Length: 176
Image 1 (cartoon, rainbow, N blue to C red):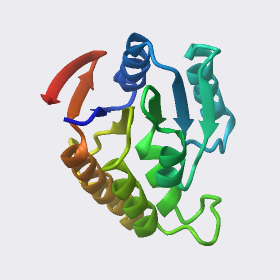
Image 2: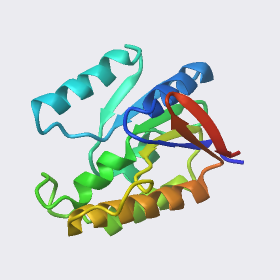
Image 3: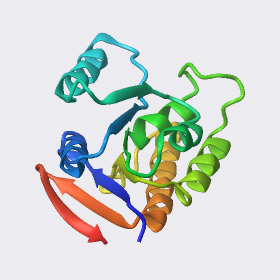
Image 4: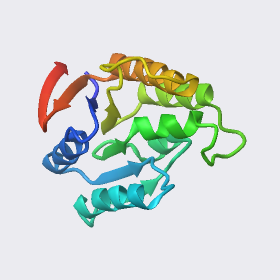
């Protein structure tokens, strides 16, 4: 079994805190790949909260695109990589108003990530939102996001050796 762990949950469920706890418990050097781009003050405060919670000796890499390439670069035997989070990465890849390089396409980004995940050494912790437990949203882009997030989570879960669902800070083992 590989050491890839997908951690799913709703907003503010404790997903990131669980990934950080598992990384600390591993005793391995940690690289934290942050996918978010800050577009407003409130979101900037959320990002700062996450930054302040991390140990200072962890390496942080801000990588809103080319996630497969970043994983390949930073994963390794005796290393732990946290990706936080797949949800923001996806949103930035498909959002028509988000800043992104012209050569970025969601199908290519998704394919590159899934291709790399199958061959990575070391411990990989992927944080992602479960967005399929509510109603079907209004608006085409919102439905596209929900559909793509569900498909991405399913694809990553197939590759991952472990999958957990977090609610109210409590993890439930789904796989592994």
